[in-house]
Length: 247
Length: 164
Image 1 (cartoon, chains in turn red, orange):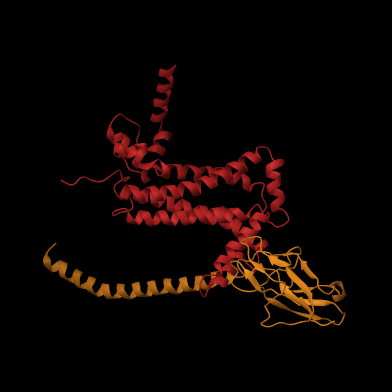
Image 2 (spheres, rainbow over the protein chains, first blue to last red; image 1 turned 60 degrees about the vertical axis):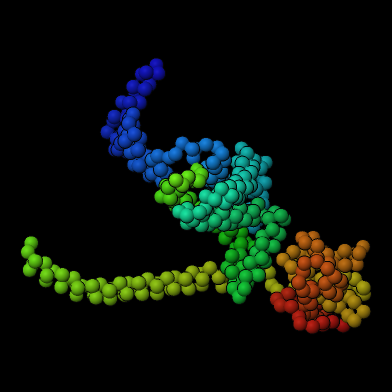
């Protein structure tokens, strides 16, 4: 059975359709493996080869991978949540309540989204601390550190914009306080606040703007910067796995 | 190819460089102009011209509804109407720290902010807390129907009482 399944898979990989999609086949040689990574749009961001040491838990605590994992969970749970949520003042709070009490598995998706969001903020911070204390931000990886800081900001903005969407008292006052912090920016503070909220108070315009930022603009920006981040890991010589011993 | 054949080609390239330079300058210039235009366009688009927000002027009803010595908070419009010995005055209930809604505490006789603990007297004077300024007074007047009106759009610089 196992043999025949393996044979069938081998046959499948030999078909014209398969080869048109994947070009290089699998194979026992390093060249085959390298081509499989290199010719895949997603895998090619990563290195074809890495040091075995950089795979060990103590080097990274897998914090970057875990951050990506929470981001993927947030995308996968966020899209279904969008199907029941209307970003409008009369409906937002009721929709959030519906998701918790009326929609099948709504409470699971919402809670998974919420807890993953908290976890992502925590993991991204932990990732940056780990990178900092190991000195992995040093040249030639200094630009990737900057990309990482941008990703931290995007994570915080995603967290902040998502905070308004339940449209409850906590959300309303948190965004009122947060947007008043923007007013402290010299010269342009009140103008920026006006643009962010689309008005003078946290209102219908603010809810819609935060929704668009949370669901479209910021995730798209995060995805682009994540791609650059991963590609730079490869370009900067792989994951930093320790001091290079000088002769 | 001989050297003779190469020379005119090189000369042609030399001439093309300056023309190319001109086009590059033109191109970069147009892109800069387009970016500046897009930034202005974007700003104009993002700043709403019409706001469907509540009117800054609120009708607080007849002044008789505010007996002497009372402090009344209107939750909806975020104003205090205080009837002191010198007359009625109106104050914003929005904390000057980060914009939370303050609350009148009758048992303590003070106004307190639930967010970060700022405290104010009934005249809006800061007692303590992170708030940088006192609660602003608002312009109040009696209209021809005898109703008390309050303008929340901008803070008054000085004290102003409505005498009934």
